[in-house]
Length: 298
Ligand SMILES: Nc1ncnc2c1ncn2[C@@H]1O[C@H](COP(=O)(O)OP(=O)(O)O)[C@@H](O)[C@H]1O
Ligand SMILES: Cc1ncsc1CCOP(=O)(O)O
Ligand SMILES: [Mg+2]
Image 1 (cartoon, rainbow, N blue to C red):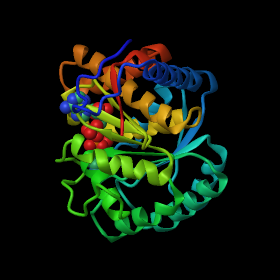
Image 2: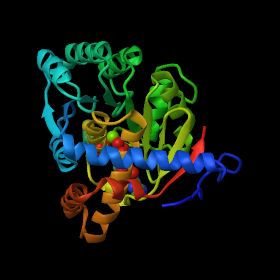
Image 3: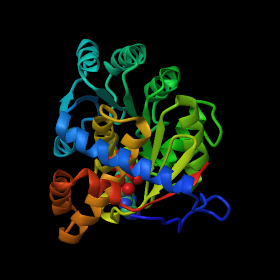
């Protein structure tokens, strides 16, 4: 492991002091522990997620050791929220029933103090999506995971620094860079007191105090639908057994490592998905923690 700060803008990288060595080691240990605990405990992380990638989300959660359960109805969502170690909410394809399900379950999760992960997929499309995402602000997800444009748009919707109503969300895809979403991610993390994971070529994970830039993955991940959604589902599995920042970084690092490994074997995007699930299944906590990341204070 050791230090690597190649991407940190000048003046922002943490110095190589004893304190930062200790900070890095603490983070690496927490990430490794999250990876190991998911396999040991087998936490259930239920999902309210989109109909496009629901199978990929469940298989990725199972591959890292968790247990999956997908629901749509309000009473069933309440039940899995109560029974699960964490819950995943992804607004990718909304149905009318979500107008009841989503506010009820986020309120319950907040009242229970139970971690939940939000993926604000395609934020900006339609009135219901905007209403549901705006209404989540007081219920504070432990982890917000999205691509750069979604993170900028969510901070804009919640009236936070770095946000913009007119971010570059294009359907479910991003047109903004991860770096451009840094201020929005930090502001969101400070609002929730949890963590924010911004995905892209190099991912950024922050708790509002430090930011880790996690390296790896493959451009092929943007050619397979659900790499982002399933990353959120895996973050929920880890959030059931670890603090938000460690859980978000563990999921992000696992994806970067498994993505790199899968790309070495895949002949194209179809077999990439198969090799990717295989690679996730084989990861150890120590391997996840050893995936390269840079650390900076924010
Ligand atoms: N060009 C890339 N190089 C490496 N990894 C990538 C690249 N694009 C996306 N990824 C990875 O794919 C996963 C999903 O990210 P992304 O495509 O940004 O999410 P979304 O599908 O929600 O837009 C993340 O693990 C991210 O690191
Ligand atoms: C294509 C699509 N349309 C609505 S949800 C969805 C899946 C998006 O998945 P991801 O953001 O992980 O690529
Ligand atoms: Mg997405």
